[in-house]
Length: 268
Image (cartoon, rainbow, N blue to C red; front, side, top):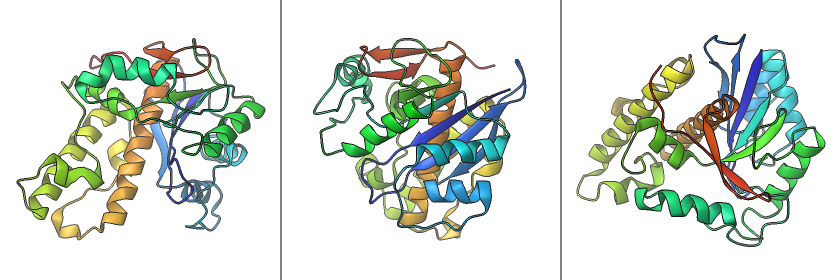
């Protein structure tokens, strides 16, 4: 039995972080999405029924691992986080950032520049917390249990075999489709989301079951759409962890930090 935990980690404590857990009962069996939540607190609530506190966005590696154990019966083999991570404090762009941008920049998947402030302490505490729990950062080969850094944009480019990054961010719809009105932009966003979920559902059973079907009739608020986006990114992180476990991902970086990108995908 194996499991992976994917985390779309926010760089500040003012924003929530999506979490997704997937498991495999035995070798060769399909992977299944066990749980997905738009925040740490919502993930804990799925595991133990506790009340979710919406303003508490601080990560707790021990509780994340324990909640995973409660939900699927055992601890994850690999944790994949969409956030700059390193063995030493991050003060600026890393070798890993430049390596990914050099390879994927032409496909509009360059990395954001981290600093000592963003994500700063959040990154340091996540890396340290998981290491102390027995999940050290993996930068050259995948050891289990372990922790890896991932980046959804190039991962989705590889999954979809797309020429450039997919247009699926809620806050950027006006930039993606400047000539469309608000209703048409939302229609286009939902179409892209449906496409991504279709691709992910072929790799992790249960994705479509646990993600909402959205339409213009739903009247969904932007804040609620952001929660859907965060869950989607968390599932992508979990998928990259699966690919890394199966030997189908490459680390871009050096010993201090590495961003794991899945190999170009072929359908099963």
